[in-house]
Image (cartoon, rainbow, N blue to C red; front, side, top):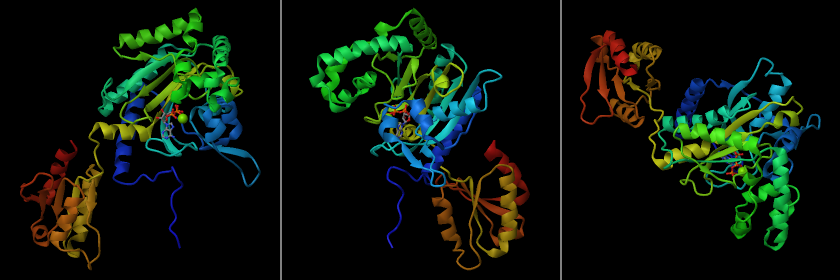
Length: 429
Ligand code: ATP
Ligand code: MG
């Protein structure tokens, strides 16, 4: 029989890589605690209609990237979520969750998009997602950008060198429609230089043409009318206020008038954090304001802003920058040469674990326990910091052997069993 394989573009995350994920996730949780964002979890599967209405019919995601299927039980049209925001907004509306006032939320989500798999681009991937619901900004827009900077610092990334910020304003729907008319006129003037995708989008979603990566279209895109020129005083004031906070916080950014983002629901502030370390998969985090989405999904008008960060890309970035991420190695490997020592070894390991020490105990019955030497080899290759040796003669004296494994030449010493607790305290301090 041929062996089964994972679905293309969907990855297994195994040790030791999984330890890096946990390390990253710990940093994120700690960040959310400091910014007082509360955790939310919504289903992986939603009605297809949610994304068609929420993300927009003419977006890449809805047009060609969704995993949609029919529920075999009742024929409902369902979709594996391709992003987090629409589901969270649906949940807020459904549970009237903003009844008592605004909420700041975060979620870690698995998402699905049918794209061509490559480094940093997968069909199942993971995002950290934040949403501030019920605040008109511009303060929370800036807060969410500053949160990212705080995370970069916690992770050991350097702004400017490893990640940089681009921002733009998409204005309000009426400003966008004036710009849209000007944009269509501009592209129609030179319709021959549009590619097939652009021609198809010309009348449905011309703003998305600006996001095209086709090199042949860059000059016509470069000369296109800028949305910024169509923004009225209120939209400009919002944008200036966001910039004011970033400036005051000493955060450098570039205003990129061509930044439009791939989802239709954005207005006013949009931003992306990019890196040069990941080739064309250079956007590690993107977000913005989406004041119209609640109404679009049948809720009452609610201003909102959020971002999504790709975890796989973040980990690739951390690796390529050379950030040291701790592995999953235990503090202690318990070497137990004979079964006679098992009972004492077990209870000692339990006591160590109870005070927070991580202990990997050599396992096996009387047969095939392996020699002391082979157990030491395993202890060493496990990456543990110490071996504790439960030798019969030491135990007879109420003692164990303690050997540092990570500094070459360090000698094994003898520790009384009753002193292990105070030794453990120095480990976990
Ligand atoms: P891109 O332009 O690279 O396709 P996007 O604009 O589609 O990105 P968003 O919808 O904003 O991406 O998703 C938020 C983040 O999720 C991105 O900034 C990126 O880090 C990550 N991401 C998006 N698509 C993928 C994918 N197919 N595989 C892995 N990560 C992804
Ligand atoms: Mg995309």
